[in-house]
Image (cartoon, rainbow, N blue to C red; front, side):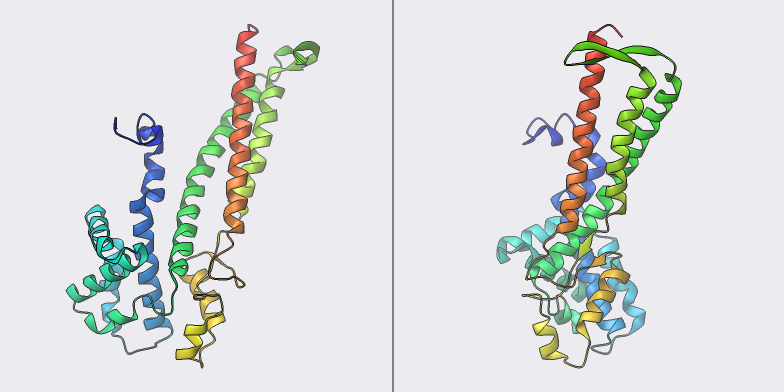
Length: 275
C-alpha cells in the first residue's frame, strides 16, 4: 500500500501477511475476545458461579470463533464512545450475548478482571502463535544451511582474519557455523513457555476473594491459564505481567536475526572475493 506508514505494510506485505493476522490490531482485538469468552466459560461452566445451561456453550464459542474484520470495526466504533480499548471489547461481547439470547449472563463478562488480565493473556497467545511461525522459518533455514554444508564439505577455500589470508577451511564448514548458531536460538524460542496471569488489579485476587472467598482463586487461575489458554501460569505479579518470557523469546529472535545478518555479510564478502 502506497499510503502505508512503514514498509512492513507496504512493499514487504507479501512477506508479513501470515504474521499480520496475528500481530495486527485486528489480531489483538480477536485474541481479547477469545480470552474474555474463555474466562466467561470458565467461571460459568468450570467454577459454576451461576446457573448456566451447558447447551448454550456453542453460542459463546461462536462469538469468538466467527469474529471477523467487520466485528473488529464494531469494536472500534464502540471504542469511540468508551475511549477504552478493552472496555470496548467487553461491550461488544455483551451486545453479542443480547443477540444470542444470553442477556442474563452478560454482566459476568470481564468478571474480577483488570485490563492487563485480558491484555497480557492476549499478547501471550499472539506471541505463542508468532513464535511457531518464526520457528518453522528458522528450521527451514537451518535445514537449507545443513544441506549446503554437506554438499560443499570438501570444497576448500582460504579463510581470512582481519581481511587477510589465514588458514585453509572448507565452504561446508563455514555454512555449518551459521546453522549451529541459528539452531541455538531456535531451540530457545521453541522451549520457552510463554507466561500469563489473571489475578486482578494488583495481582492479589482481591475482587475474586471479596465476592467468592470460598474458592481457591490461585489454583483456579493456574488451571485457567494452563488448561484453557495452554500457557504457563505466572503466580507473582503486580497489576501487570513482568513479561520475562516475552523478553526471552524476543532476545533470542534478535540474536537469530543478528546471526542471519552475519551470514548475509559473509556471503557478500565471499562473492566480492570471487568465490
